[in-house]
Image (cartoon, rainbow, N blue to C red; front, side, top):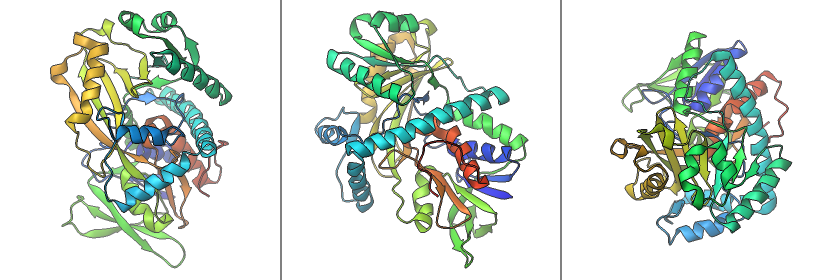
Length: 420
């Protein structure tokens, strides 16, 4: 069986590997010149199974309204006349209802736990090198109200089978000594010992090398542009070589197709599933060379109050955060980077080289529920594995294993709403 996977990011490449492990012939097509240049290029680097709660929560409408009057808010949105965005926001508000939020959280937690187990198995089997740190994530809290919320969060995670241990400031410092200079700022912390961090871009490239060595064909500069539909209920992909408008369209034949194109999935999926609710949400990061390794934490951090994460990647420090609705514009807005610079200087000071900061913004493919779309489309030989939002790195390996299992007819025993 020959499969074509559309998209060469972390979702597409992990899917390619899961399919190749089953002995199938696999071709990956990527519109860009190189792989993994989208949302996984410089993300927050966390494998955060301990953060299964989607953004669509009962508190989200209040946070969104407050952001309209606060340029420094973690979420940024300027209302505009955009029908697609308005529809997505309406669906997002529906998913904020408490029962829907709880249902979505359970689904993400189940897939995240499964995905972590797959990641660990592959890493062990393949000896993948991507600056992985397996010391968990520390969620930091700075006042009593936030800490009470954190403890409630730990209890919710325990019900989902996810470990998060409440820590005093001194216990947090024992886990991560680089926090010692900030002792007076901490009120408490949660340590999620099973979580990890690592460079998603490096992981994707390393796994792509294993794919190529195992016989997977990887074609860059090849854009998927549409479909031809046949009377037997099957579809055939149309592609454009060199990904330029002047190039001619060609047909790329395959037995099965899997759509893993991130924010590009919406247009390609429309004739397959209708108006697919995948919308781009821009995230930002800074990546900084480390001057004084002893002063930069190795354990990944999550500042819950500012919704900022920081991860150690070898001799680099990645600071990431904010969410912005800006359409398909993936250019960094200097105003949105201010909060990351401020946070980084407070916690890193001169232990990093600010003159060499790499600024980045990328578009996360978000569904209103936060739950990715994994499974069948209305055409019997086309599948989708997309819409992972800010958790693409966390959910990638499990999503890949799941879609391969669905195609093979033996889906994993994960309590997740696969499209069937």
